[in-house]
Length: 94
Length: 369
Image 1 (tube, helix red, strand yellow):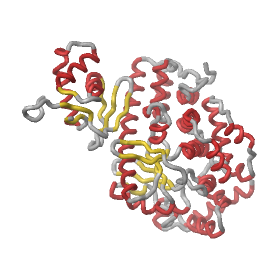
Image 2: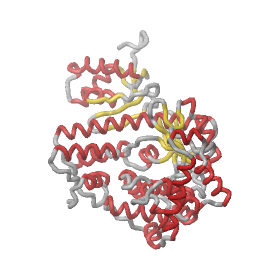
Image 3: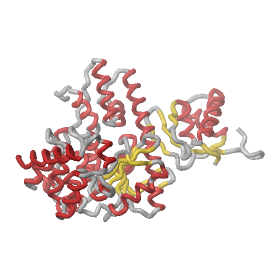
Image 4: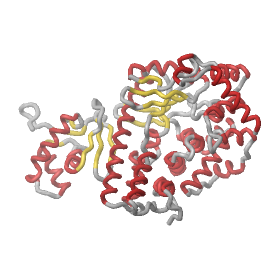
């Protein structure tokens, strides 16, 4: 996912999102939203991995490390999750 | 091991999860019992503690029911977040208008007293404002689409005599706007204390810093909520008292507030309920002081209006007359309740004659005791 042409975009959790955790999910309510997102499985791992800013490559590596799988196996899933999280306003460019 | 296998006993065990001497939750194997138990957990807003009990192994559930519990917990947490968003908006509005306020109960305790906010859920937002700012606050919250759920008997009645007013948002979420911390005589007595005299406990919700009730007054409020709220008491209110004891607070401040307002009976009942319902030992200087205090005749009469078969708002209203500071206040209170405005009567399908007759009947019942 390219950011502004010529530089690599880094992503992070949106400031001021309201959150709760359970053992199997993270609930996130973005400042401009009225309905919390329930993130489970890979989406929860992606969310956790964005506690610190990361570009796409670093993010995929972090998620792969957390799940104990090869980065190539989950790259597509991580990228599509990222797109969904950005659309929901809970992840922003750093 | 608990001997009482009633649904309430299982809920009590969940409410006591992680506290010293907490029993396992025995809910039986019948699907109907499990369903009833899970509905009770949701109703009592104990999903966080139930999930904790399942993780700690003190609650055993079949896989499908455990999944149901997690879904209920996620639904409740989603509601908690939506309510916190409302609280942040309300706090911002009041700060902009320079109106002092204190957030109460759920969100405050979740963020300042419980080890994890997911353990303390809530169903509405409670905000205390000074009596002098009460009506203005209702006007200020109108642009946020909050309006009174119930009419007041006469203009200015709630800001002068009520515990507060329930405001309902367009999205169905509610803000309970308080001017004191309980209805009836004990709420009236506690209103003599300056609930804003101590610095707020500040906590952050998103971009908004929120003023929560200080820990000592929050403890007093938790006791009022447990002792004078629902009957049987809300288990989460009892858990609040236990969590506040764990966190610690200045007990001398609590004694000062309770002693100066004559509300020790409320703490006596709250501590008794904590021992009886959650099996939590209540010891220490504060408990010793509370146990040593005797009950007055007023206490015995007043407590009956909150718990047991004599519980009713009408009886609380009558006993409130005893503790009002002047005859003028009493007259204004009785006049407003006996002769409310016509919209108020219409909303209740009542007449002045029927209302006065019922008031006389309740007052008569009280005198006869």
